[in-house]
Image 1 (cartoon, helix red, strand yellow):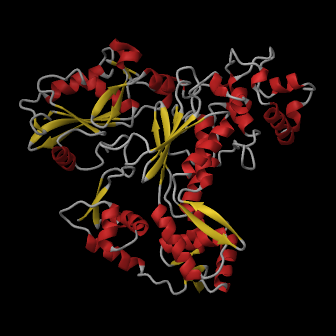
Image 2 (cartoon, rainbow, N blue to C red):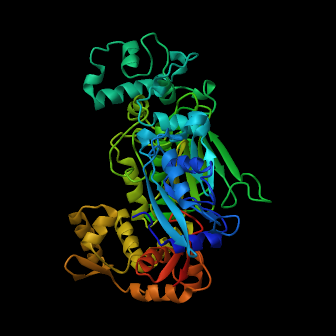
Image 3 (cartoon, rainbow, N blue to C red):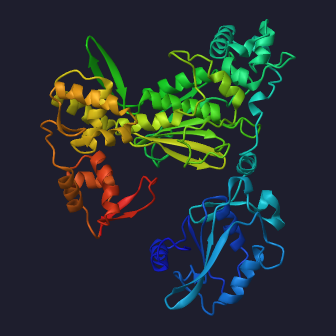
Length: 564
């Protein structure tokens, strides 16, 4: 089916916006196909696909073009894309579908462009060449792709030896001998065969890809065990910046309210960046027996994993070594961005499948044996469980899934901040329970509070990825502590839960919504008196039932809602 929604609704949306958008492009094309159509074909094919409507005049308010020659324009498009017997205008032409539609009683030509497979990108205008004829879609614009973006597209499936690059000016004296010894010892424990026959330090360094046979230091070795890698690559660090507003450099605001450049080898960069982030997050202090611990509004484990991934999986080819990993802390979120897009066929859809594909295998191997400076364990493991663990940890604390923003030349992890909700959940547990709980008991209770006072084992298992028998044991312990009661087979309820049912909560949200005025989730929470986390939980379900209308993408911070 060429259209996902009726053409009339698409045109109505464009007229309301006054412009095209990221997925729809309109061209007047009165008497012939306009030449810039091919820029849009390239942009849609290289980005996420899209719809081209030919025969509408954007400048006149998206009205049908006068005397639109639909058959001529169709033939010119088919010929230009390579299906008319003539040479194609674009190289690596995408799959497409054609159809006719009607707007205000006049015919228009609809062209659905499908995104190319990664191995076929980029689509480009042949006469201009790949460097000058490749485009990407950004909002309603077709933007020429940068050399870095093109490099990433063309090398995304190719083995890389960037982490094996020889650092010409470095010697073994630039390596920390204590870290080198730790790496050797840890690798010997992990894989006894790895050092078989390597009976000298020099041979061991070569075997582990820290140096070459000539004694030259490799980039992976320098980043893992170097005393100060920035002597040779000044920008291979983590740049942490704290912003006062939800966007960078808001008018009238200081550029940063805190900033730290975290340098040294990768383990030091990660630990320093984690400390810098922690200084700027809200925390809840938990008393445990005679001791206490701090819970961060975004879990430390999630942040450490995101930082490690950014350093290990970033692009280290010459075009990118002048860029740092960046951490931007805003009042509502944390963004961790690394140079280089996804590699090896990874996409947003399969990031959490547990399959590990590594752009920098030498560095990954070393990071699995390189100790952290101020924490137990190594920097990374290479079994593909990092991102699934991040997702589970965030969801188990009712903090929402991490968002992943993929571009050709960068990858960003977006973690929402929920400091106020962290404090509220902590206050509720302390006031409601009155007894000391384990971390898992607290997590399960917070999950039940967010998703209704009654939950069964299957629902908890699907959300938290815990073993069913473990869930039954935890629930049984909470029953013994008079926190939960059993109300059916494998079903439990929080005792004396002083809150309305899920149905009444949805009713309150619906009453707060207006059919005339769009509202954000936070505005709905204020108007309804329902906690923001519950509002976010109920809104998608209400949309699925057709009770409300949703404006904006699921990743937009400005997503708005109205009553139907």
